[in-house]
Image 1 (spheres, one colour):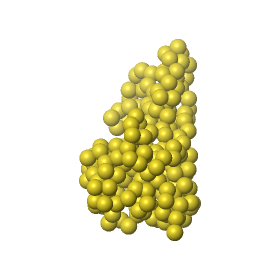
Image 2: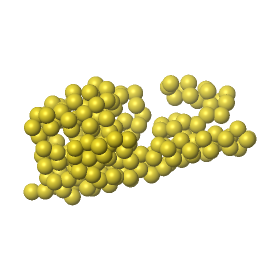
Image 3: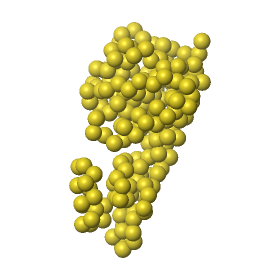
Length: 202
């Protein structure tokens, strides 16, 4: 739904939006800046100078927000950053974007979600590349199974369960007659370091 349709719905009944910000509508969103900042700082400390961000669906508010966070962090740590499009936010989409990642010259990658990261890692390893010796890969969300890969996937943990709990509590308060918050409620993200990132230091 576009923003105007959600605003119209919110004018008619209590609405809380999760994982997206819409002015005038109560929202609960992961604050991606903290986790992305930790990820980029970690990559910079390992000597990476060029980072690629593999984006999610074009219509995704969160994908755009994560790219903005990557750009800001890379600017702060003086890393180059390039955005690459994916065909779909799945393991197969990650495999398909591998050639673009190699062509970008990036030695580190942050993906829109963990599924893209897993597919990308599988495809690069099939092509003979060593992760993280030659390229570091960082996913997003810390889904179940992110640590089952070889090497285990470094990822930015997004507290979706906490977002859901807070949104439900807000909605119940609104049903009892309280006003929703004027600004988005933000929940911190954090970097979970595993084996898929590191190494490059020259």
